[in-house]
Image (cartoon, rainbow, N blue to C red; front, top):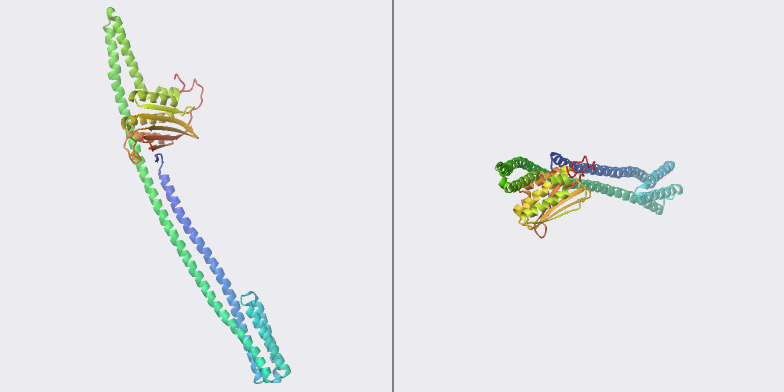
Length: 445
């Protein structure tokens, strides 16, 4: 289980989350508006098409009804008050009705009622033909009248069929429009409801992310305060220890050397001389130890690889904990980056000695792609990851701060076999390849 320590949550991150969340909400609302407009246009186009067709059919039906009345009038004159003086007018009315019905059938050829219109046109043509024969042949027999009435009845049936079909079609159109309107309302309501739910989810997610980001910012601010206080305290402790070492160790050694030299007599010069050399050696050792505490010369002269091996050796001698150091890094890193990684390793080993109870430590340093990895693994008691995250230990805080300062991240994990692994990943920044005489990292400087 890993935990990422180096997330840089800033005010810009919070604003970015808010902008993305509300932009998504606006996008969803825009999609709803687009779909609503498109559906409205489709319904309007369908309604205009259906209504236009119905208007054509209604106008044609009006013409048919008018012509049917004309045919009925002709039939009435033929069977009741027929006069030879009216023959030409009756024939003209029949021809006019036939032409009108044929024209109406032609106009309705592209509608769904075209078959009925053709049937009506044929019925009217048959009626006008029989009525014309009735007028010209002067046949007033009962059989001729029956045939004439039958032809007229066929016309009436076709007219009734058209009227009933038009009525049914009008009802169907009304139902279709009502259904589409209902479907539109239902789809719009569904989309708006979905958009509202998504908007709530986005808002809740945005608020949650913003709250987490703000908490993380507060946590980082608290860590920065701890780091600042640690730096101040470390400086004071280093100054105090340096002062005590100079006073107690180096000062006493030099005072003893002075006393020996002052009291030196010819007869005991050998003993005094050996004592002075021993005191000088102790003073030199103390000076070197103080120097290494302030900054290891090994790091400046030979780089991080050699400094880690030296650190592992000294730590193993001091604590009797076996340390294995592996490094495949062949180039020198930038001075600041080497310092950060060395101090992280130094603090990690200090924590191992103080808290872990480990008997073995492994240090691995290697490069991968454009990053440098430093991993310190021990076989000690380990530590729960939530405890690591909330740990008030200034050592852990300092390591996290150094990893962030180097532009990288610090992960803490617990291997299956127990113990603890601190894995630092930072961008690789290599030292410039200068002339050895001008390179401050060169050995001997």
